[in-house]
Image 1 (spheres, one colour):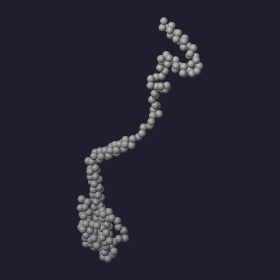
Image 2 (image 1 turned 60 degrees about the horizontal axis):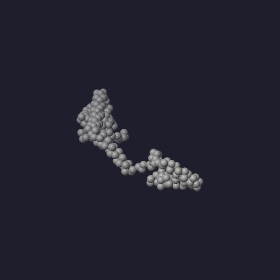
Image 3 (image 1 turned 30 degrees about the horizontal axis):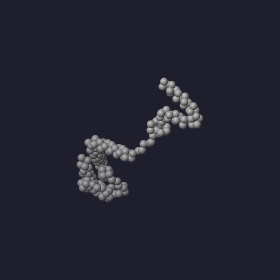
Image 4 (image 1 turned 180 degrees about the vertical axis):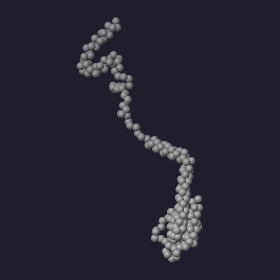
Length: 226
């Protein structure tokens, strides 16, 4: 019985549907839905089309803004790491630095002592050669040889240079020698110049005195080398 009644209702409404469809299909559909008690729209959307939400793609997102405070913090950390590395390197080498300095001083001292010893050795050799000349009667040459060797070694030891045109006395005034060595060199110069320039002939006593002053000068240099 209910099915018959529903069919009768549909048949009664059937002629009206084409009329609504002919005038306005959308309005007719809304009227039919309203008559049947149907809800045409979703709750909370009055006639609006609902579209699904989609996440933006990775490249469509807003770019990240660099924080200046973060860059400052990274710079501070970098400088702190560099400073810590330098401090650590100095701390690990603290025991080696004085040792390296001492090694350089020892090497320099050894070099200086070797140079002084070599200078004394050359002076001894020159004295032997001068003695040979004196035994041959060549006293003036022997005395002059002692003077030349004295000036050469003093110049090397004091690390000074002077012109060849200077006289022995001018060279003596220009040198800074200890009193003992300076007096010995002055005595050699004073005895050689008169003989060398022909003012007086060389005698054995002149050579003996010159040789004695030469030995004093050699001993002074040897003491400095020791």
